[in-house]
Length: 429
Image (cartoon, rainbow, N blue to C red):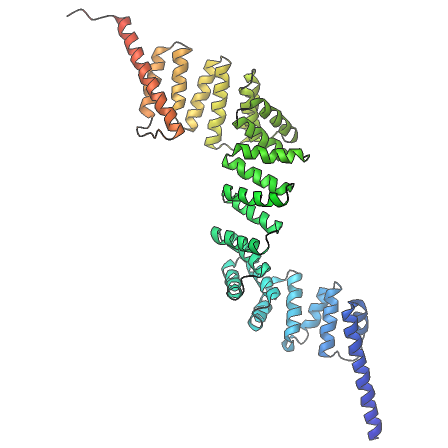
């Protein structure tokens, strides 16, 4: 009997060992379906190892709910490996509330487990607990500043926290390790652009364009940075390079058109802005600059409809409305419609009461075009009254106003003299 029992135990051990070997082999071969077929139909209770392997097979074969249900059975006794599997499955199915305590437990046990750390950070970020997420990342970074994924998450969280310099320095740290990483460079470039750090954005794009001269995204980003910085020549250079590659997008046509306008090359501006209109007739900027460019042509009246459309399209910010009405005033002046020009100068002034130049322009029309000297004198005096006293001649706009003041003061003396001689000398004494 003893020999029979011993033989039975030996056979059972061999069968079990063979079964375990087969399971591990199937696992190594990623033959999850066969594992499921073998273990899910097993009549005897699963061993702890078999339970884990079956749960893993369910997950890998696309049955996360079966993984979760299996691991939740007797979950109090789950091993760390089972908790990791359960945590990642909850996370992948979007059940962050269930995944969070498991991730926190695993972090206590394995504080250098990067996969678990990044899951926990994403969960905390989702729940708007960025401060705690930052703390966990910085705790990890205290021992290791070189982990790519940790640094990437850290930079993203600094962005959300509006810690501008920390975000930038973290992105730069990544690029120092991985200087050819275009994805990180674009993230940094867009962030620099959003923070109006246009020269730094341009420098970054220039560095990458040396490596990849035809990279469309760096050409556009660099072009936009130069456009916003007012570097017109560089803007043209980058967008013309795009054009040479066959690009005919709205963004290229629009920015080339506006840049040519700012360089006072109105014919080229008109061509590009008309091309931009083929893509979008409802863009207030394109309508404004097309109207303004046409206003500088031999037929300035053609710009009026576009400027009027720009007024209809914009959310009326004072600065934009002022510019549109100023352009309309200039066009009507150039076409000899002085009454309408006066109305638009007044509207421009209403949107920008500090710009006393609009008063001067109205006075000049009454003086030199409508021959209404009394109204001209009234407005010239108003111009002097509303012009700031402490003007800085080093500033272009202030210098122009100073020059206008001299013109107005001289003209008022002339008008006073003309009035004096018209009335004649008083000889009563």
